[in-house]
Amino acid sequence: MFDTLGDKLDGVFKRLRGQGRISERHMTEALREIRMALLEADVALPVVQKFVESVQEKALGQEVLKSLTPEQHLLKFVHLQLAETMGETAAELDLAAPAPLVIMMVGLQGSGKTTSSAKLARYLKTEKKRRPYLVPADVYRPAAIEQLTTLARTLDCPVHPTAEGAKPVAIAKAAVAEAKKNNYDTVIIDTAGRLQIDEELMGELAAIKDAVAPKYAFLVADAMTGQDAVNVAQGFHERLTIDGVVLTKLEGDARGGAALSIRAMTGAPIYFVGIGEKLDALDVFHPDRMASRILGKGDMMSLIEKVEKEFDEKQAAELERKLKKNEFTLEDFAEQLRMVKKLGSMGDLLGMIPGMKKLSAKVDPGVADHELRKMEAIISSMTNQERRNDSVMNGSRRKRIAAGSGTSMSEVNRFLKQYLQTKKMMKKLTKMKGMGGGGLGGGRNPLAGLFPG
Image (cartoon, rainbow, N blue to C red; front, side):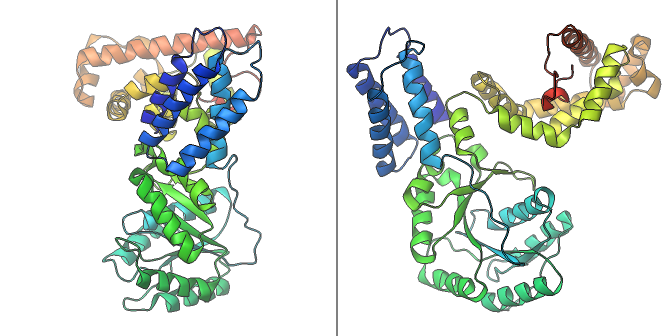
């Protein structure tokens, strides 16, 4: 995400490298290039102007520290301004309102409202321990009711039985009453959209808002539409007053114009971002972390949080014990592969590690996922004895495994070589930790599960 903008900004900083000190001329040239990069990223012109003025004022208004190079000096202020433009810190949901708390999802047709409604329900259920009630109130789009009902079933989440032909305002009022009766503490209303903003749509949404008084009216906007998403946000905000934004399809947004403009142009913070089609692909939006990722500085906090959700200390401790006693098997390796898959694509994970952004751009997510599936197939074709004791692997066994997994002998041999190298490396890291080197699993580091020892 934001690869184009990140690459252009990286080029600006590269040209400052090797300069002994920063001059006003250097700064003027660099800021002109930053301005062009932001405009090419489809960032709104008023936002670009304010961005450049703020960076210039801060960077030229402070003396360059001796410990900083001109590149580092400018990078610091660009990072601060990126975060500030997007909202500085994550916007937190206030869930303290009397139940049922109502959230109204609005937006144009095709922006991802229905899927985002289900994703939000999952987030509230799993992360906030809420009891969400999904309400299909789009009675115009064919199969919209059925789509949300199916997604709700996948989540094991209650859904309002909306009848075809019912009026949206009546649906919303009945759903809130039903939620109150059944002790559901959060109502998520999926409203209708149009291909473009029109008075009829806005009138209907305003009527729903007046009828149920939602705590939050969230605009669902497509990040890949860039400046159009900002225009839509302004249009909805002027007529409806939105409380926040859910920005979808961020994983495919190479420019970043919407994310960098919406908060500044509407005052409404981005609460969540959609980063994929799966129902767990909804993240809280952290402006400071996103600024780091844009500048290629990674996002270790988000990586750590992802790992914490999938790994626990007992698993990490048991893995470490097995490595120390040379009991790490192909079964354990398979389990590690499954857990890595849960964290997301390889490209996305590499992008969170400082200094790895360029490498992540070279990783084809499809190829990486295919390789992981191939490894799992090879392990699944082994007998229990083979999985627990790799030393029994002779030629005939490898040939049988290749046939059973739909791979070749050379692929099986390469996989076993990778496994043995990984096992050796992990054991070495464990020894380093025992000698006081810390390793990647030292102390209470939650990455211990992903990188044991």
